[in-house]
Amino acid sequence: MVKRSEKSMGEAAIDPTIAQLRQAMERVTTTGGAAPRVDSGNGPGEDGLVPEVLAVPRGLVDLFPWGGLARGSVVSATGAGSLLLSLIAASSGAGAQIAIVGLPRLSMLAAMEMGADLSRVALVPDPGPDRLQIATVLLDGMDLVVLGLGGMSVPPSRAKVLAARARRNSSALLVAGGRWPGVAVQLSARVCRYRTAVGGQAPDACGYGRINGWDLSVSLSARSRPPRSVELVAGVGSGSGRAAG
Image 1: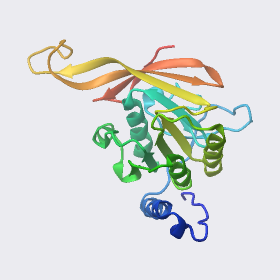
Image 2 (image 1 turned 135 degrees about the vertical axis):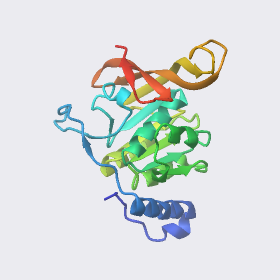
Image 3 (image 1 turned 120 degrees about the vertical axis):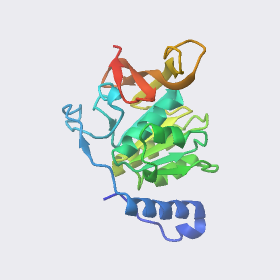
Image 4 (image 1 turned 90 degrees about the vertical axis):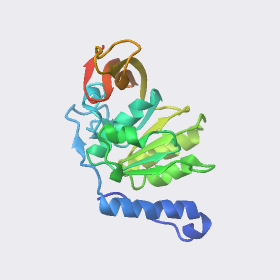
């Protein structure tokens, strides 16, 4: 069952936007349900606990310390937007309920082509003046909140509040496009090659054809292990990957 927080008295009158968000979460979680809580199988961490994880593309499984996005964690991502799309596709395809906040240019068509279940994705393209408050509310009811920071540097005091909310609700928070203090896992991605298809030409003929896929070089830095990177196939045939160190 998906988590829900207590609704404070008078909240609807004080902040109609938050009231509407809670109503929308009720509709999504009633029809969908939460993602299965997957045991990472990688053994306990420093605190002796094994975190439950949300699914990631199979090419990134070995990159993450626990084989996926750990519930209760905050992860930052920089670089190619295809990385966010691939994570959204993998998690929603495995049954996770996802909210995407403040990222109006993120293509849901591309996410669907990567395997996303859009019935499990809620969009808040314009979160208003306080996107952090919107994300806080969504962490009460969604498995994963993808938050575009819009270039802002998040104050440590507010970062602690959202991190605590994610831990309390066993949700994951994925932030992009700004600075988040004290993040435990940092992802970065860049396009390292494009793949094309064209009739009568070689599949990778330079300057010809339609791009039907690309490869990302994805790096991860975490407190619990040395930095690592892999190459992830995106677009057509996305999901595979090759370890790069």
